[in-house]
Structures are given as structure tokens and as C-alpha cells.
Image 1: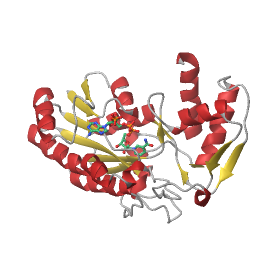
Image 2 (image 1 turned 120 degrees about the vertical axis):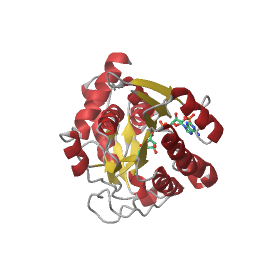
Image 3 (image 1 turned 135 degrees about the horizontal axis):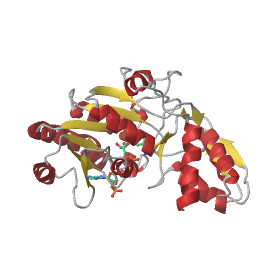
Image 4 (image 1 turned 90 degrees about the vertical axis):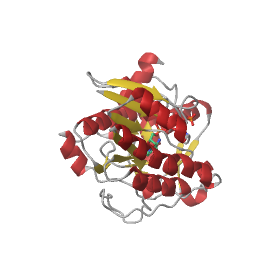
Length: 285
Ligand SMILES: NC(=O)c1ccc[n+]([C@@H]2O[C@H](COP(=O)([O-])OP(=O)(O)OC[C@H]3O[C@@H](n4cnc5c(N)ncnc54)[C@H](OP(=O)(O)O)[C@@H]3O)[C@@H](O)[C@H]2O)c1
């Protein structure tokens, strides 16, 4: 069995390649060798690889920049997904597409089920929702949230840098979600794909946190492992005092019950995963 991973040098793409199950030949493509907005290039990549599974983890993920670059975000997050869906069908591949909790507005105050109605607040969320619809009913769509891993830009790596260089760090305390460790997400994607799941699934690690809680946990765990020399004050901030171009949902926890049942168990708590990632950094730098 062959799998083509597009966006393979991103956080999730890297983790997918690293955890490719036995018996599957995984081929990774990313910019600049494959731009998923280039229809001709996508067609020839699929003709060359002839995958059974096409995993799309390429995306325009700069949430704030997307507000000023809507057309660019739409080309990658929506239009290109439609092309991937058509091309996957043409070569008989199953499309696996990753989406986001930012399709929701975060106002209901309880976890969102996969069939809850999206109401995105940002260009990023809106274009990702368009992409979900263009992926089509035969695709497996996995919404996730707050992804971090040993590779790429993410909140954990940013906090570690700030804790080591700033006298204090302010972090928003009124946006609630769930951190998700990229290698755990990758394992879930492989498992759901190989089971032939279709439709919308939700997957994050277990538990709930604010960005502030997450930051405090990062500092505590990093201190315990000797990755930081000393603690700095972490100041809880309100979103209104930290304006960003894109509006983010206040409470975007996803209801994962159906996915956890399909996977045969719940994902570990986010703090367990965080400790794991920091131990990886401790041993490999
Ligand atoms: N990160 C999160 O917190 C989060 C949360 C919820 C959902 N998601 C979703 O999870 C998926 C994976 O996210 P991630 O965190 O792994 O993102 P990432 O680290 O930003 O990786 C995305 C990859 O896609 C590539 N890419 C961008 N435009 C492309 C194009 N036109 N053609 C081919 N490749 C292109 C990027 O290359 P460049 O770096 O060169 O642009 C990058 O290597 C995305 O669908 C994202 O929307 C992420």
C-alpha cells in the first residue's frame, strides 16, 4: 500500500512520515517541489506515485496573516483541496484531510460534536471550512487543535524561548481548547485512514486548558527536566488586552468520543504528551 503525504515538512507531515505503519510505503511532498495550488503538478505527482491514500496536511496556517491574504489562504486551504479530491478520485486514492477547531466560533461553552454547525470567525477558519466541503463526502476529515511537536513553529517552542530570554511573559487566559501532540495526531490519522473511516472526525489529546494553563505547565515541566534554569512570572491576560488581526474562538474544545471509540481508546491527557515532548527535547536537543 502506498501513501502520498502533501505538506510533509510541516509539524503533522513530519510526524506522519516518522510514524508510517509497517507495510505502507509513504512518500512525502512539500513546497517547493509540490505546490498543491498547482493543478498540473498535483496531477503529475499522483500519476507518479499512484497512492492508495492521499494525506493532505499542507495548509496556509498563518492565522493572523491570512486576514490580509485571504485569496492566498483560500487557494491553499480550499481550492487546492477540491483539486486533491478530484485527483484522488481519479487515481482511486482515499483522501485524508486535516482541519481545525477554528471552524467554530467558540460561543456554545461545551465541546463541539463533529456534526455541530461551523461558524468561523477568521479567514483561516472560513477557508478551512470551505476546504472541508470541497474534500467531499468520501474523504476522511479530521479536525484537530493547538498542534505542537518537536519540529516546526509552535506554542511550546515559542514559550521555551520566551521563558529563557524574557523577565516575564503574558499569555491569554480566556481562550480554552486542547493542546495536541503532533506524533499522537499522526498515529490517529494513520489508524483512522487504515480503518477506512470517512466523514468528519474530531481528534485532540484529552483534557482542556487555556493558553495560560498550557504555558504554566510548559514552564513547570521544563524546570523539572532542567530545560530551564529559573522560573519567570507568567501573567494571565485577557484577549481584549492582546488584540490580534484574527479573532479566535473563546472555547473550541472538540467532542472526541466517536473518534476515541473508533480508535479503541482515548488519547492521553495533554500534560502527559507535553512531558513526553519535553523529554524528547531533553534527550535530542
Ligand atoms: N498547527 C495547529 O495548531 C493546527 C491546529 C488545527 C489544525 N491544524 C491543521 O493541521 C494541518 C497540519 O498543520 P501543521 O501544524 O503541520 O502546519 P505547518 O507546520 O504549518 O505545515 C504545513 C505545511 O504545508 C506546507 N504548505 C503551505 N502551502 C503549501 C502549498 N501551496 N503546497 C504544498 N505545501 C504547502 C507548508 O510549507 P511552508 O512552511 O513552506 O509554507 C508546511 O510545510 C493543517 O491542515 C492545519 O490547518 C493545525
